[in-house]
Image (cartoon, rainbow, N blue to C red; front, side, top):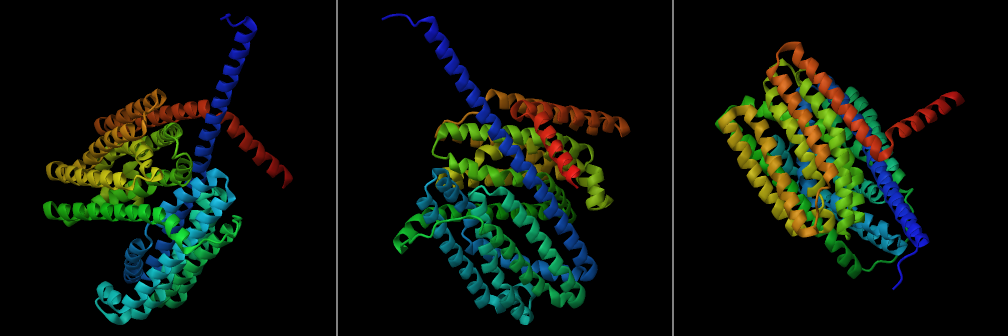
Length: 523
């Protein structure tokens, strides 16, 4: 057998170089998509939080505590029914729609969408009928009187309207129409606010129920407007086929809904324990601290998830592609969250005073520990989500049940021994354990592994976070803040440099600035 000639060697080398360039271009495109979606929905989350703050302010000023309590009881009561009757379709169906969309088979896409729409109507009507029938008892449970029975009768319509709106958003997300999804969210929130405020102004507490109903209508209208842009073939789907295709959506949806109830139960039991072992004030401080973490830092997770879930669902059949997708998402999550976590630790006292008052400053040490835990949560979040797209419902619920059990125990022990600060330490410890759990399961089940580049990124941001933690805790006065600011700048610079390697941040920023200049030139 003759040895390959120099020409053949050169051709093979050229082919290898082309393959490497193609792989690099594909990775860069994927990283850009992650960052683009995160930026888009990060902005949406900020806007929605702003709308929520404005609405709360109007309610507080125009209706007072009684009106806020009235609206909250209507919302929380119907939310319980929605969580039980929606069957988790708003999450589970994204996997099926994204997977069908990835095939490019129009018939398959149309079948899945048709089945999903039928399930949405069934679950939405079920929620409405249950609320309608139970209206007198719901009024008695929530308010201790049947005086608000008609209110629950009116609000029952929002169960159907809300489920139909969620169905439109799921379709947009599953089909990767992310700009339309973002626009629907922003316009829906804005329209709801503009309709609610005049009702509060003119009718006071009597305007609460109409505002809830009109808000549901405007939410559906905006979602449906953008949902119609998705062109799906009309196909005939038999009842047998509906049951067959819908079984997977419902099964995984029920598991997701159960996990949500399990998480709610865990938080509830922890609050009961804090009240028993400590004080009601500590319950309020704990709730306030983790409300800030979940709402303002957690919005990064929400923004990423909008794009991540359908992308992961589209490659769920391929373990190697799943591994690559998870690593890319984990890379971006750590690089974005790194500077945010450091800024959170440095300015936590200022944030608490702005959002609450000086009475809540006792939570700052708890939140500093929890901020480090966010890095471990980011990594575990990227890995732990793979069970849902893979369709491993049994494994998912067992894993989450075990995790919630030991998280509850760790938090109880942390509070019992170290008070509020112990809850922050417990958050960190619990997510270190959870990260090990999901990585080991994913490795055994899907041959998953973190790439060396992720460990390098994670170690760098963790080291900066620990240094920042020590500076604000051990160094007094302005010196600690000064060192903290320097560390924030280092973390930001590091994240920028690493993102630039992956997506060409400098070129991307120059492109955006060029577009802005062109638009300004036209005006």
